[in-house]
Image (cartoon, rainbow, N blue to C red):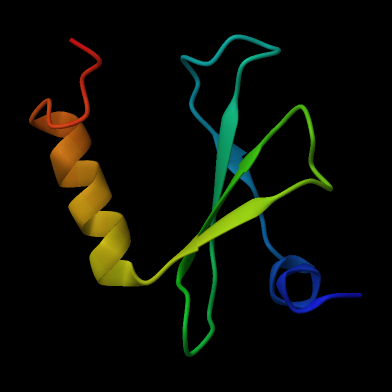
Length: 72
């Protein structure tokens, strides 16, 4: 088991109620010294996981809400 698998082994994953069944991003809260939020693709639960410190996650959410990451 690698470090990320160890950190996320007991994670409780959640997805938006607005998500379609096959296009979901799941998020989990963690309690580690280096990461507090994990993000993964629900189609590949054993695949890559992005780990964020709390400040980084909050910055990502704020940028998403204010349109900072639009593709236009």
